[in-house]
Picture 1 (cartoon, rainbow, N blue to C red):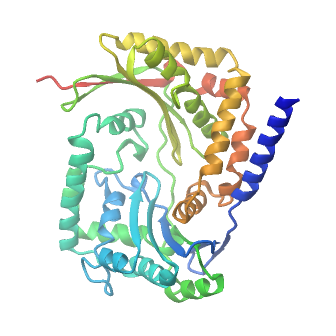
Picture 2: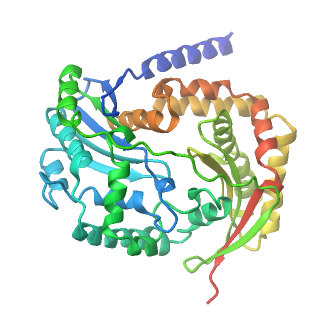
Length: 437
């Protein structure tokens, strides 16, 4: 009886939490194609204005990689109405904060202001969209900034080029095979006209979603949006079909060196479907089962019990067109790659042949329920989620119903995904080793 009461209490709590989690929003399109999402929450006097452009590193052409990330920096240079070097000063002097980030699939810019400066945030993002200043001095300045970022985060960082090593070997035809930061050689070779053309091509209203979230009055916000964005000309909508890679049908092994490491790392990477497909969600859950936390399968076996690895992880890198599921391991002491590979393969084989326990399955469901309850805990986070679900997933309301997809995943689904995508003939083995002196 006591157990039933506890279960009932948990169910009631989760039910209340699910209802409380509902994010209300309104969305519509301007005649120029700009998609607008409004979320009103008057509990705190802050407003986030974010614009997500459906352009990432996959939209670049071969020989000109790194443009999308470069624009993440370049578009803070200013506009005819915001002098060079003034962007961040305007934001901070008005009590705000701002940032931008880029992935292979999209670029996102945002400002968060006290709600009495909502209009300022809307105006600044409209300035960026309408007529950002792109000139030689800005290109030269930001090129050096990006070079320094690459040196700090990748070239001089232990294991800093792991992700490029995976991308370059799992993808060969699709532009996912180069990293978001791109090649410095490509950026050095690019001419000003090419940067201007990239801006004209992708930074247009019909390739963007505007999100305004927080302490707003929707009718006033709509009027400001019409005033600032309504007159920005519509751009040409470009096709987003990219070369597809042939299926991996035979195990491939490559070696990549890193001068910044003393211990090797071994990666076993598989190409998997788009994160929009249900199997993308299944694989995300599978990665959590294998390595999320100290009670996970691989951590418990290879680190805690057998002490064969210093680090081990199963990672699901979900992307719009195709994804990557990869195992990463750093051996402990004299543990060989073959030993790590055999142990990881054994755990995969178990999932392929047996259903995970009901207890482990329930723990997984609880983890994802908990993540859902705790997600979108800030206005800034809600704005980013609304934009992401709209631009990359094609359904803004996934912010409320994505948990239903995870709830629908069964133990059989986990087994089928492992059987379908995690076979040894479908992978690339990457030996990431120290560079010989």
